[in-house]
Image (cartoon, rainbow, N blue to C red; front, side, top):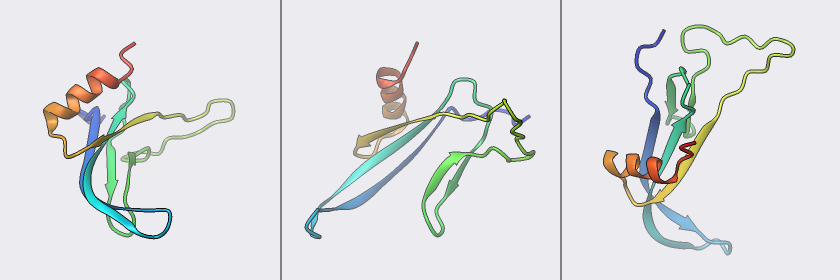
Amino acid sequence: MHGSIAPWLAWSGGFTAGTFDGGTRPSGAATLVFVAAADSTDPWFVRVDGYAGVGQSLAWDAPVIAEPGVPVRRSVTVFIADGILGTEGIETLIKTQGDNS
């Protein structure tokens, strides 16, 4: 179908946090780690133009058909970590915080 599908995707960056009174706090960095379900065969998509978005592409090369009584369901776990994580740090995060059952 798609060849090898990456089990996770990470997005890192710097930010300035807003406060409730409209001010800002010092800048920081964070990494978002998106982890697909173990049996997922959907490729990832990433959107950066207009608005940021990450997800699984359900209609990458063929539509996914929902039929009455047979819902289409997907799940993605998202970890939010302080700082910019590299591959080793991301994989450690997934192994130590993920649902390994």
